[in-house]
Length: 159
Image (cartoon, rainbow, N blue to C red; front, side, top):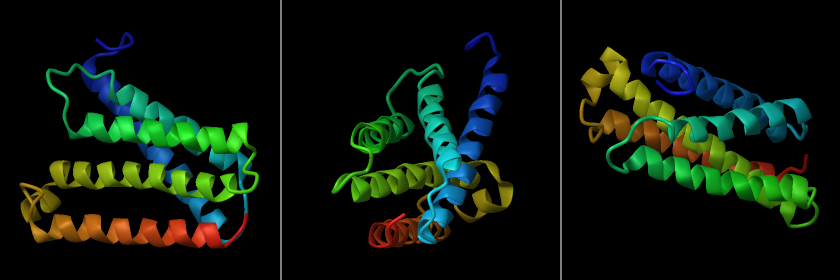
């Protein structure tokens, strides 16, 4: 039991929170790419992305693995995002710092989503059962390229 939920129920809650974080983050990112700031979408993205990492640490663990490392890095990046947004009000250098850290946090969520998709969706798992095969590398590479471009673009286009 985790927070009074069975592990499958908690896993489902964690997954729903993660998907909400990804969707709200993508909506917010598209707005940023167009030069618009969506306050509520941004808040929803930040809250659900933080909750995604925090709930990820609540699962029973026997050894620290890649998900824990990604979660810890994501929380560190999100701490900088929160400082840039709420502490420094995105003034001066803190505007691009916020943009980059928000994009990185969203990328980490999508990175994990791709991992989960290749583990759980039979047709994708058949293409890359060990997640070392080219289809997996291509999917992760395309995600990285997209988010690197998006981060560069939102820094160049003020919102």
